[in-house]
Structures are given as C-alpha cells and as structure tokens.
Amino acid sequence: MTLLLLLLLAGVAGSGQSAARIRPSAQQLEWQDLEFGVIIHFGPNTFLNQEVGDGTASPAVFDPTRFDPGQWMRAIRAAGARYVVFVAKHHDGFCLWPTQYTDYGVKASPWRHGRGDVVGAVERAARRAGLRFGIYLSPWDWHDPRYKDAGAYDALYRQEMDELTSRYGNLVEWWLDGAGSAGHTYNFKSYVDELRIRQPNTLVFADMALFAYGDIRWAGNEDGDIPYQNWNVIDRHGVRRWRPVEADTPLHNRQWFWHTDAARTLKTLPELLRMYEHTVGRGGQLMLGVAPDRRGLLPAEDVARLAAFGAAIRAKYGPSAVMAERVRATPNAERAFDGDPDTFWTAPRGSHHATLELDFPAPVTLDRALTMEWLNDGQRIERYRIEAWEAGGWKTLVASQAIGHMKIDRFAPATTRRVRLNILAATGTARIRTFRVYAPGARP
Image 1 (cartoon, one colour):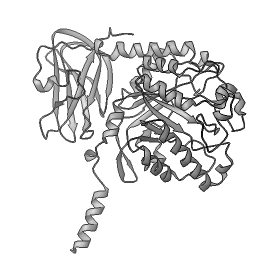
Image 2 (cartoon, one colour):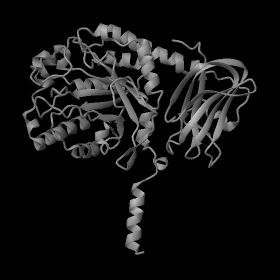
Image 3 (spheres, helix red, strand yellow):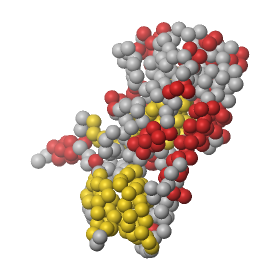
Image 4 (cartoon, helix red, strand yellow):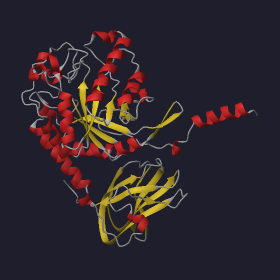
C-alpha cells in the first residue's frame, strides 16, 4: 500500500472522531458554568403592543420616560442569572445604538433628543451588576432596502456587527437567530469570520441548521424545556462537535416583548421552577426572556416574580439546602462533596463502572439529587442509577443516562442512612464535581 493511500485512509478515519474523545473549549466550559442567562427585548414593538414589527414604525414611537437598565439588572441578579444578552436589533431593523449605517434607530427617535445609546447603557449596567454581556443582532431586517440584495445586506450586517463588537467590551455570546428571513440567503460564514476578528472568545448561539457556525445549539423549542437525554457532543452528517444547549423561553407566555396584558401572561413560580429543572437540571442553560415596559422599567410584577424565582432556586438547590453530614468520606470522595467546583471525585483509572457513596450518621429522608460531571476531558457517563440502602440491599431511586454539566433527579421520598451514585457505564474514567442530595422539606 502506498504512503499516499495510507495518508488518505488516515484522513478518512480522523473525520469520524469518537464522541468520547471530543472535549469542550475553555470558553464553552466557562459558559456552561454560567447556567442561567436572560435575553432582553425592548424597542418599537414595546410601544406598539406587538411581537414582530414590519419595519414601518416611525422612530418617534420609541420614547421611554423612565429608562433605567440598572433596575433591570437588579431584578435579573435577584433571579440568579449570571449573564445577559440584549437584542440590539430585532426583525424590524430598528437599531438601539447610534449606528452610522442607517438612520432607522434611536438616533432618529425623540428619546434623549436622538443622542441616546440603549445598548451602551444596558452593557454598562450589566457589568456594574457583575453580569456577563452578549448581543443579539437579527439577520432578518424588514426595514432596510438593502435586504433585497443579499451581497449588499451581508456587508451591512458585518458593518453593524463591527460597531457592536468594537464598542461594548468582551461579549460572552452572540445570538445568531435564523428566524423567518422570507427566503433570503445569508453569508453566515462571513458573519462568523468577521465576529472572530474582534471577539475571538465569544460563543455563537445558532440552531442546528447553522451547525458549522455555532458554538451553542438551540433546544428546539421556546418552552424552556430540554425534552431528551442531553449529550453535549452532536453528530451532524458524520461531523461531531461539542455543542452545549441553550433553552430559551420568555417570562411571559409567548410574549418576548412587553404587552398591555403582561400581568395576565406572567409565568407562575411552579412553572419557572419546572423550567429550571428541565434546562439547567438537564445539563443545559436556561435563557429567560424579560421585557421592559414603555417606561423603560421592568413591571413590578415581573420584578417580584424574578426575586421569588431566585429565592426558590436557592432554597431548593443552594448550599443551605444540601444534606452534608457524613459519617465517612475518603479524600477522593470528599472532592465531590466539598462545594468546590474545581475539585472532583475520580473513579478508578480505566474503569467503566464505579460507585460514589454518601453515608449519614442517622436515617435521612431525601427526594432529589444533583450531580455534576467534570467535563474538561469530555462527557463520559452513559448510564447510572441513584440508589438507597434499604432492608439490607440497594434500592433504585432513579435510573437514567446522560449527566453532563448538571443533572437534577427527582424521585419518591426515601429514608436511608446510605445513598450512592452507581455509574453503570462510562466511556472512560468518570469524574464527578458535585454529588448532593436534598430533603423534601427544602421548600421556597
């Protein structure tokens, strides 16, 4: 066999890389640890009581009277979110920063006599609140006449992107929405290439149709739900990549922008908690949509609901809710119980099955568990059970598959002195950052 043929075969074999060997980038690992973000919609739609504008609204409609992004960020922090993505331009084409490439935006509005910059004000407020900041720039543009010429509009999009990526600091995420578009074809490759010039560490959100350009994938719905066993490595036509999932949903049922009936559509606290458990608790990110009203403030009902949501998460899954007392723990096992995300328990080297046990000095009742894998070397656990020692044997409380960044498991209350994570199958040495159990009494 010739050397050339051997090299060609090696290249073919390499293209089918094993999922078990694919690892996240440092930026993806950092982003996954953020867990919970907020996306903010605000613009002419807010003042016209609509979800999607057609680009014909007069800039004169945009005139918030009490604009205060600091108030938004205080409410977002209270909910427990760690990053913010702001919609700098929605499908109507209205630009919320003073771009030089179109007059359709805040510079043509009465707000602050046309000298305001919503994006800049939101970015500064987010950073003051200790939140990471990202941007959504809609490719779809109903207003601009250049949209009819694909090449001309691609150039415009890149120009707008250049302004946003050079003025507002390091961006944690760039939302590349593929919604609508009326048959228009975009040069997405050129967009991402342009983004990488000024923001090489920014992660791109995109649905699976844009698999080649995204670092983060869409969950497939806007319900705040990951309805499947969540694996971070995704196969697209034989190409495998690490693509963690973000599940977006608005705080108000089916309303991303503020509407006059907002008080009626506000999601309940039980709904929000279920979404948290079905997103963050399934190894993904929760991206919750919030919407300021015509004043430029979050409504009082929204602020209260966000605060209650954050308090409920802390009550159910925060450090004070953990049942932490143990009668023994080896130094290796202690690393899964110490609350330090940089330490982890390691299964025996080369093993594909292992157990991690918690022992209590007296019987305890529990109904939930939280488990986190150490993902630096990839997602390895394929099947596991959580078991309790009862009547001289191990009883299965829950049996499942993927763990990934975080897995929350709920089960019927069980009383025991011993509980264990039983890893039934792993592609390599399993590593656990965190293993916690909770009592039914931990309530908001």
